[in-house]
Image (cartoon, rainbow, N blue to C red):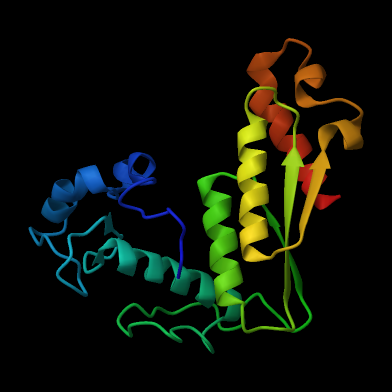
Length: 202
């Protein structure tokens, strides 16, 4: 899988160190995992320590583990473990979430989390012609912030060939977030979160 710069030992290390993940925290991961300084499946150094003490994983196996978790949630036990390394397999919901004819809308902010999710879904569902994926980006109208992530989202969907819809606060609510706040910056996250969820649902 081409995670396009989302190597967990690099970009995500700062965010995940507190949970035992990250390149700079590799030594701490090894100590917490019982002193073993290699991945459970290979000889590479671990970048992730999952809750199961047997799951010290290098960057490649961490990505593959994430992929299988998503696959298990989507399809249930029937397809869990397909294309995996066996020991990575885990029990999941037997029914799964995906049915033939489903259309999946992925909220794509342009940040690393939604980017990773969209890449995972398009990769996992690439052989499912009966399931359609589209990306939806909400433009809140935050000056000096949104332009860069909007461009990142646009570049990603073009590379993946995924249909992309952009909805804006200005079109839906008549004003961008900066105007709606009216100087109440401390309430920005609360107001933005509520309106963004409503925008995605609409």
